Length: 391
Image (cartoon, rainbow, N blue to C red; front, side, top):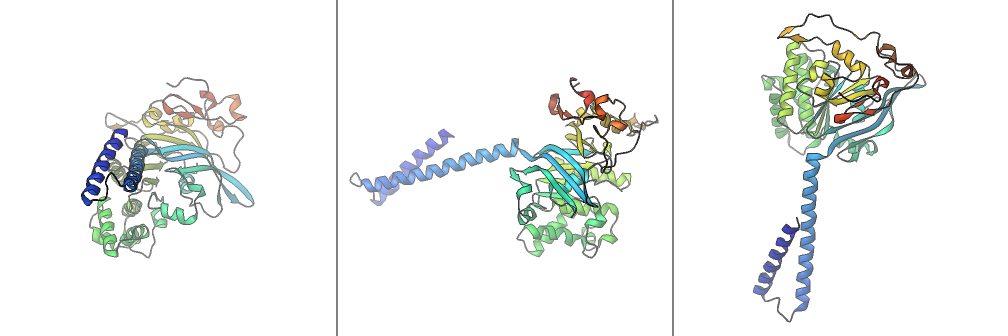
């Protein structure tokens, strides 16, 4: 950078001398003109130095810095005069262009995490503590109008229930174009053209018919694709997909997963992919977080977690997943996790998973385990793994 600025200084100096000399404005007897010339050169170089430094900074930010940083995020819901904690101390990050999976049983706090990140909690929900930083900005400190500018444009959400998320009296294509109009100063024709391109990009056939259809005239898979098109409308940096394959037949599930794989391969968009099915993350997620009772009990690289699960709950989820052997379904009996998920309003003391755990220790029923760091950037919350070396 110093060499660039030195060369620029010489070029500016001689160019200015030639220009002013040709105009007859600078002579040995005009020190005031020479002083003005030096001041002008200094100002131009200062702005050039700032521009080069900013370019270098932004280049490093895009390649190395964390896109989303969540620290100690805790969410509660008020009901009947009491508050129930649905999310307890969630801490994680998502890098630019990275796909992170969030796995857990129904009711463990996955959707609450997604809604809290965008500050879309229902009226009885409250973020009790924590911090959410997106590109260095604290989202929890922003005003409502600033958050409206971020939702859909920089961070978007694929809602879990298309029938609830889509407006039943508005045509499907117009609902995609509406997102574009909210964040772009484009005319209606350009917005419609962009919406039609998005419908084609999410592999919807007969785009014109789908654009003019109402949600009740579309299948479940088509409505799910409309939500994905909405999420991609303004090229956001982060897309949160909340159970995008739930309630679909196996063929449509495969098509939706292939669509996300294609989006991941051809864009720098980061994804937070939420599901209760361990099988959907294979080949899609770079890292995996496992959630139980509002707590992230394990996180690490996808291959690491699948090959050597650390938390007994993660092991139980993987053992309960059907497997294939030589292209055929393995007929070996599945091993379900005993018991049921706890009632979030009356969690047992100590580790919430202790009543269902096959590796329970005496301390598990008395103290909740802290996060323990392992090699390779992995973390786990389990007393039985304290002090052990990562395999």
